[in-house]
Length: 630
Image (cartoon, helix red, strand yellow):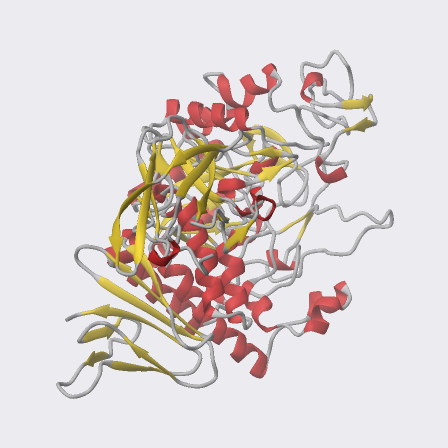
């Protein structure tokens, strides 16, 4: 029996075209067994998700060096996930099954979890790709900027207002052991409007807001009224003005849609009786009663992760669908009409596929290029949630997802994982996602759900296990801060040079620190920014915005002999850009296939002499963005 059968799913000699394909597009599969194997038979097996694999005999297709080539073609007719593997039988009638990893003798060793993945999408659906071409700024509304200290009354007197903008958010539970999240700093739409020039200095093209609608809590993920701006945030007119002024600067606004649940204290549930409506908690005759799943009305009901203040909704209930999606004045269509350009869907994996598809269709009906982004933390192409395979990218569902795998890969690499682990994680996404989606991803290194990136890169292990009082008071200082800032520079370079939209979580560019919620939601430090970090972000933003290869160029990783040196290239017809990130504490030598290059971060020119090999010294804990000039 032969020792190896050659198949690499990302090599276009083995699979053409690369990665995901449109329905109706023929895919050509080729394997390359060593010639001395004398194959008697080669078969491609392929199956739509949940179906039995079907055989496609492979024909001998010529020689390739010391290897034979066997080929079969497959044309998927409908968008779906497909899974495939190969079997080859030699002259001794031994059969090897080729799956992900390595060929294994015996069918029992070629398990479904080891099949290769083929993503098939609807090629007629046009992803709203304007998002991935620009830089995004993520604003947690209460904490970005205020123009005045808001009154501590006016929202049923349930809010605590901080007079000091630099206060630490309240993090201790009350006498009942509950954290109410009812302390506010007063960030507002007018505050954002006053900082549009600042956002423009970062070359921002998309402003992504965490929830801005009326709610009890400061995070506003417990929506009280989907059709009303939170009064502390401003008014509907303020929103329209912000969108119009942002548009003048080439910026768009996308909103956070929280549609798997809403608020205990809301127009719809109204458990505290604060609204004039008849809520589901108050009467089974409420027009909203059927939105919810009561096991014993009114006190027992399904809630998000068991949190009583977040009652879950039945998203496919006809009345709820009409209110959120279908009606001419639905929540989705209304705010697009008032100036928004798209929606980010909170906990997308808890929304039914049918709901997402209907939402997407309604958004596109209102605005042809409306964007729908999903919160998904894993590889979204093959995501399974609640035992159901999700359909996010087949066409007409999501235009993008939050790229948590990128965040995980960056932090892992800077924490000591080999560079090839990062490359493998990204190449897996590139292979599994339709190209338009991969280049449209929301590329994050921090969000309101994660500790601040700077803190992750510098905090000691004992800090994470300390008390909440300890984490509230702990700040990186001295050498620890210097080391974390160096890693932050490297993280930002990777984030800004990978395909997709570099998404800045407000304040990361200014050096904001913080452990978990609510410490990661401190206010933006106006007047107290880390000036050198901010200047670095501005330079990165300028480089990202002015080099086409970094916006839409092809991606290629380069293998190096050092685990701590990450090198990848971005290429289009006009430019070659190589990115080198050296996390190690010693210098690295980088050899590139060119004769001259300029480091866009420093302006330093590198040239190859007639006698010397073209080699660039990459200092310790440094990154370069090298534009090939010859």
